[in-house]
Image (cartoon, rainbow, N blue to C red):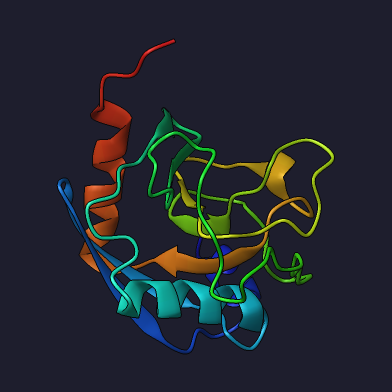
Length: 154
């Protein structure tokens, strides 16, 4: 598995998210995804994500949050409008602990706002569909794994 890390470009910048399941240390790829990283960091600095929930949790796939309404229908970017997707050939959803921008689903392009997700497992189907801009690092990855234990509805 160590060859996965070698393929990824170096990170530059960090955000510490505090959740009810514990802290998540997120390292960012601002060189590869400048719009997504600036949006995420600015929203964090403004406290936009405080007291929001992870409204969509699919075990072994993703935990999605960043919607202040908690419905999956809300959110806005710091740019005042949705921003474009950013894909990089060395960034792929190959493992758990990756951070991506959520979008409107199948066929939606360039509609990134405030919603983001963490991968809870490999998610190849998200490649070239969702912007991958960060990764959970260190021991805080164990806190991310706790999302798989959350009871979910159907």
